Image 1 (cartoon, helix red, strand yellow):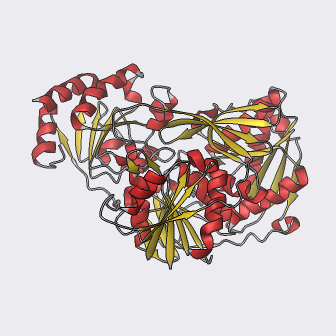
Image 2 (cartoon, chains in turn orange, purple):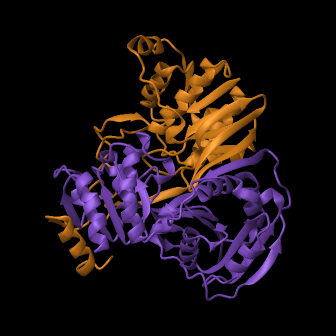
Image 3 (tube, rainbow over the protein chains, first blue to last red):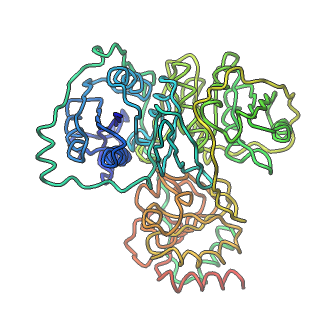
Length: 249
Length: 310
């Protein structure tokens, strides 16, 4: 079976982002970009399923500006077999991404789509669930363990009070949580090999999808800053302050 | 304009994050509540007492047990015709169900709202809370998840809403609940606790988390952790506070051996009072702490436990 893995190009995890002075968004010019960390976990899981003989082919998809091709190369270096780039300058929101992915699913016929549970830029945590809805597929969100047996996918999920296990009929959607796996680093030979792997290029119009955003960003503001506090010299002083000054204990 | 709020419940009643979602919905207009599950008459009765709710819809069916996303979203879509807004708390359940509902309604869901500006305009954090985006939707129906830490929950008592039964017309049988392993703890849940004490990488191992126990017991606190501590395998993921874990805003948050990565700060910086205990005086956690103690946690924690008992 084929597995499709969407990967998003985002501001690198370690970058301290800044709100633009005019409040129109986040400063991304000249900032280091990387693959969304949860998507790395998704690629890793798909590649492991291929190494176990469960999957036959892993296809990475990235949607957005031309530079998303770099993110695809990272996925290919980690072990994905080929890439699809859906190129657009439009600000893609989860519903549009889900519609584009649905059209790719119709072309490629994968039995599983593995996505990150959220992107660390917009923190929406929506694309996987939206794609599952549009396809009429079941969803295993926030997965920490995935097992395939015949036509059934068993997913252990991270829920608020602990873990939950669900059984899903394939085809199905998985969204990855932190503990699903630890993604590998691409080795230099694999990075070289990835350069030769094919990436197909298309536009949203080729897939018959209108990617126009439904949400308009009115403004982006800095969160209120906390006032600097004080250092206390001892545990006794700390407890004293909490009792008599802050009055929280 | 009427809003429908999907609520979660347990034997103790309607959960606090859901009561916060009701509070957010009240800023929009009239509020109805949906209680869905298998054997939920008591939860329906509890929902009817929520302050500010005018009607409770109760859907009781085996297929709706355990908050399984696929049948729950089918039910919400079925009921959506009467409502301008559909809301749920941004919990594991709400985050799974609401985007699925939105896609079925051809609407872009809006996750994790922290403020209602108007019927179609909401504020939500982006980039781990480093930006607060005000977004306006061009859709005709609005599907929202609510960051519970940003809305004071409505009172669990005081209301007397009408209760109406609804039935799920068409349950998709593509998924099945198998089991759950919930952590057994006498402590309050992280998202509902008045006090939280969290450990980080500085705790060095899982066993050392027991140093937090006497303090948590004394303060009636929930125990949390940074992602670094979860990644290192010290504690399970449900302890995680931060961008990719739980977002909390207790009255008192005590961070122990936590350096204060922005991803952690994103989950707790709205706490009323923050205490940091860390031996590294340069640790960024001190920049947000109201009270900082530069000390070795292995001596400070037993001392703190003792001091609280005095």
